[in-house]
Image (cartoon, rainbow, N blue to C red; front, side):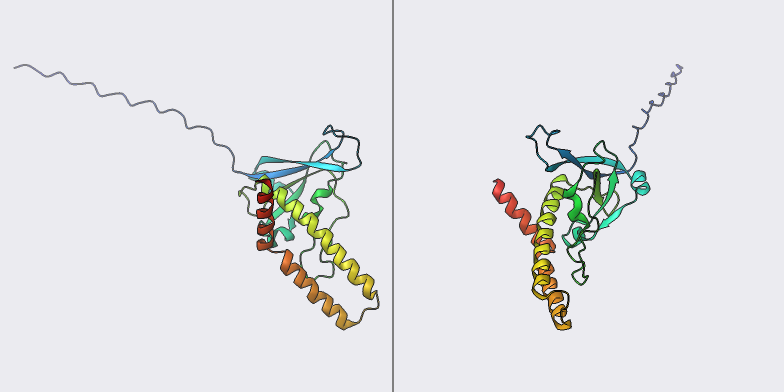
Length: 204
């Protein structure tokens, strides 16, 4: 009687090591001020800015002192901002000032910005850590808030010049109502969405 040879058990396949994982991060947008000379433009006192998308580890997000940007909440893309190291730390970054606009129409400082000036690079990110922020959204937001801030300043200046410091209480109440109407018309996600659509149409 012949004996069957026992088959050798197959050696377990060697599993490759798991790929290295990146630390949790979110995408922010870095707004860096640039001078005309840096951009190869004719000499000018104007200051420009470049926007760059960058990954930021969440642990770095936790270490940074962030400032909330209330106006961006009203426009439907809630952002926060922080100063970021750059070679242009002393170059004015006026394009970012609109991010820090007082957005409460009941506040007597409505339309004003929290800072007189902002120098150096500014990083903006979503208020929800880990969520990405798109560079085009930030670019449109900056332009919209800059134009809106200018309109609000004009509105406030005209109202103040008309009545002066000794304004009556009923006029102050009326001014608050008109300010709220202005905010309801401009400081909304619908108004910002319409602004973005118009810009897209211009580019087509």
